[in-house]
Length: 213
Image (cartoon, rainbow, N blue to C red):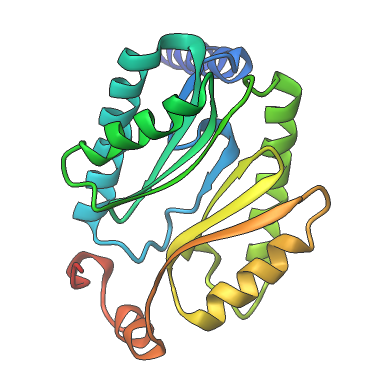
């Protein structure tokens, strides 16, 4: 009896998750939603920074939603307190308005604003972006000279944004890989640069005790 109840609960959760994924019509997305690939197994941020980034995304998304409602499609992605804004807003003035909202959120240290004043993307376009994100992630995993889990991938209108704390070598290599994926129109690097020595130190100690920059 207990097993049947557990199976039923799991099935209900799966259906709910699928329904949320298929809905795909929320105008404002935290962390880029379905078009973001976040690889959490190895993260070069401290645990505290990861939690802080989640809070930044939630607070920014909430404030943008309050300001623009469902007239905009804004993706909010934070990595080590650097916020990336992608998507569409109704008017040119809204581009700067959303940036100022993000800058006013607690603990945000900088904002990269790539919003466009144009009609919201279609469900078909977002599905294509999701597919591209998956292909880029898979290609990074296949690359033996990179630590794929150090990268966050965001795709918007076939433009791939790469985030993470990486060395110049890793930045160049990952961008080359992303450009080679079918359907990618452009690659934008939104990296926090570190040296090879810093990378060696990060690799030599557990994530919980990594120094926070």
